[in-house]
Image (cartoon, rainbow, N blue to C red; front, side):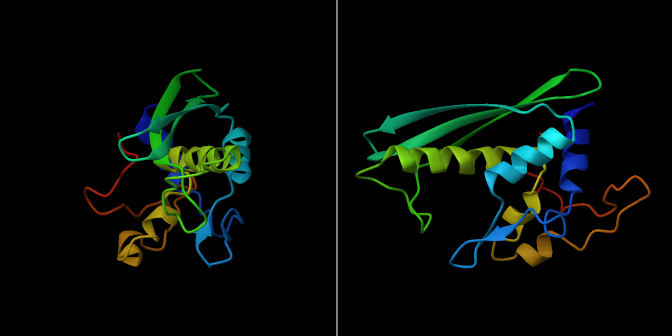
Length: 161
């Protein structure tokens, strides 16, 4: 199964009606890492994640590097996505001083969810997070296989590697 097929399957999941999306105290939509992990596991993708972090003296901050590998259940083929994310505070601003182990752990979890979104799972949450988000993602109509008939606008498919 090529990566584009994985993206097609995962991006077709309506994470809003599936109960995966929650809102934080500021009303910002997000997907808890455990729900992403559970969905990937339930679909048989055997997720494996690796994290590391880099202390960057130049920007006076810490960046978490994450790698998410999905193993396809039928072919045992593996697909991997890498992503970097700065350690952020509750307002999504980079923490430049006093980074704690808790801050790093939260960023690892955020990065896992972002890697899953790059594979397609929950990408709609990130698209609606943009100023013109409503224009990016039309209401999906599903075909008989449960896959979306609608397409993203050209050039806006961040997971279509």
